[in-house]
Image (tube, rainbow, N blue to C red):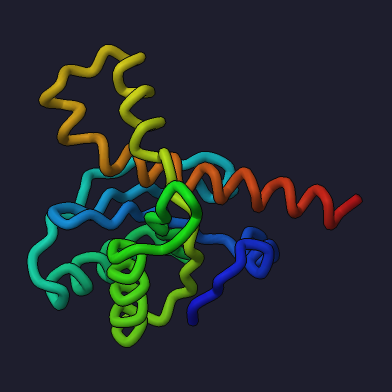
Length: 160
């Protein structure tokens, strides 16, 4: 089940489980997982990409292991907001993945998430080698945190 709008999943927070953020790259999939209250995103080790079937099997097992109820995946839009080949590739990945695992997905604008993640890692004085290993999961964490913050604000607005 693909859910295109974050506003459609506000009530999922109360259902328990976690939300997972993904930053889909060509060599790795950056991963972040929320706490049970869907307040904080925590980076996890990346998933090394292989072929789609292997990626999907690994990702599906991971989602089950963290009781993921929602997946927020970064949508790599161009700076003008248009979609290019990477966006189309991300959408195709989700379409194909949902044939294997029907968890709900939300696309989240990931513009500048990698830049923010890089800046954050630099501020923490992480070495260049360690930054290269952590950047995708840090970006996934920024993507997920943005979505969690939006869900929190939507919940507040609904409850007012």
